[in-house]
Length: 275
Image (cartoon, rainbow, N blue to C red; front, top):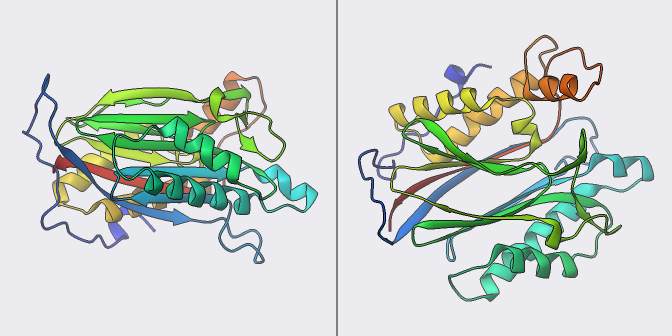
């Protein structure tokens, strides 16, 4: 399947305005958000995979998590941990009653109340007026695209190659280890958040091109998320393609011969529009 073969849902009223640049003034904005997930098909007993996410409309927030697959060697489904962590994060956001929402406080509360075995990366992004506030633990994350170019990407946290920071029942890391960030946004901005199933397989410039093409065609966030996720899947199954994972492996001195990395893939796309 190619991106052109994925039938998009056309966005009739929520496409971001490309000419609505405002700077230096706090304005009311909102995220119009959609998501798409492709679980790995390696274990029929675990059809949901190990990724998890949530979308909150009020307050405005998104969250993504990636259960650490090495737990499977101990008979543990890390997807259960990731899903509980995101469910508890969503509950924590709703319990605050409205903005401003502190993502690190939310993640800390969810972490302390998650009882499943396993561990997970986590990224929570909230919108308050014209500013994104985020916390990120590990190698899930988000990028901000403005005027067709990536203007910000959340930093990756790794102990060493292919071993991300993670929250879990073994308390390897904690929410206090997470990077906190605040990023100003404008009408017309696009947020692309994802797990490493996206960012290990698709380069930044490839995501830029997909977003720009999607905006030109008037795709909804969900349709654009579906296209990006399917491109990530295609590359993850291609043994000869160039990928960010291959580049990172070579830089770290590992003998990865090339191609993508087959994994669960979660993509969340948000258009920033006037509220």
